[in-house]
Length: 312
Image (cartoon, rainbow, N blue to C red):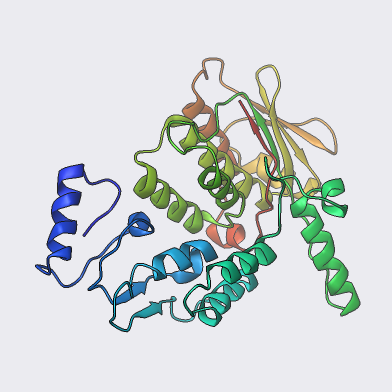
């Protein structure tokens, strides 16, 4: 077994044992994605293949078949799980382009699936530049639904503005593709289960989570909880946490259930009275989550919109 949290000597011993044929099976994380050339390795099983990007799948598949032996790559999926359209397209592409030298074709298909940005960042061109990539996709999807006379999807957004350090530090996730990828994964989290999976992935790939990363994930969970109450804004204001909301009935119910005082001042805002000695980020997040905590049934029935995090 090899993974990113092993020390150098353990990792080297395990890999040498596999290269020498002392062990027949190597169980590994994506640490083996690139740079390895083991001629006798001819079969790879990729668990939960729908969770990987197209370039990752291509790199992992390339770890076998480095010699004259015929190679096999098995993409494993959870039984009964419904794939997203993007995941299905990625798996179809990796299946379709299996010949030698298919890397360029896969790169072009990956570009088609994910879209192209500029050379320095994530800025898009044309209509996408005017409204942002996520909103553009939402508008495009609803335009297609309208033409098909299907119900439109509601774009739900929770803006969180708290004086907290919430980001991926440079010494934890380096700049470049990996950092953009992890921010994107955080923005796409839909429920608590996915959040925990992402937490495990971060820990496995980059090590123990620093405080700013843990706070970033907790803010994402806070957004998820706020959606269940139709809250679209959370901010601090002189001893209060201000909740901006859309449906008075929901906020009145929340005020009755809240373990601390929640004052409804008008038809758009409610003020949560904060304890005078609340001076730590963990205490603030724990309090906000305890107020917004609802049953799992209510929570999982509501999609989590991307974006809206402003902390620091």
